[in-house]
Length: 218
Image 1 (tube, one colour):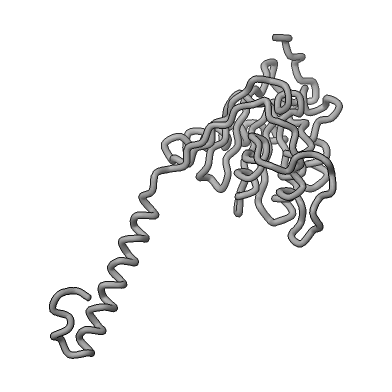
Image 2: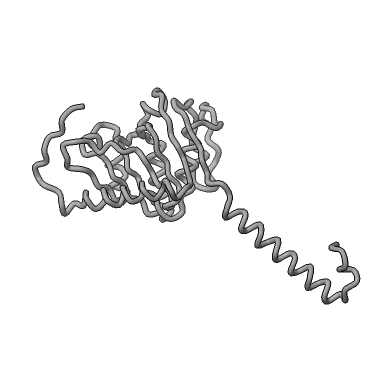
């Protein structure tokens, strides 16, 4: 007990204790709000693991497959994506990973607003997830330029940035030396969000032409 409280009438002491508790609660809330922003770095290739526990519906039975079910760079990336509650912006050059595609569809079914910008050439390649995402009702826009839409980033709930060298393909995830940076910091999130909105409007289907210029090979 604080010094002197024992000498106060019980009503006063109770009020003082209540005020002290409220002050402490406000201090804790302020500390949480001022906590250091999340910064995480993932390196690939990722070991092959089973993502069923992350991608399954609540209450589903444990997966009996023989694959490891532990942590991995891909599992950590999936967890960050699946933390979305309101919105997910995706700006991706190539997208053929079935696991990441399932995660995006799961978020869409949960009511998260998903928007995707991609490259027109690579969206048509065998194994691309773009067609499946469109069929699921997810908004997709693509370029009609001579260059490539070569960005590789995602924004979760307009506050978490996921970016790096990684293409969202099985080849890149399992075989390539790649990196992903995950950061919750408005200083970095806001410019990427502005870039996404600029491209989203630029790639409005109302601006499409019927005979786009063929892209030059890199």
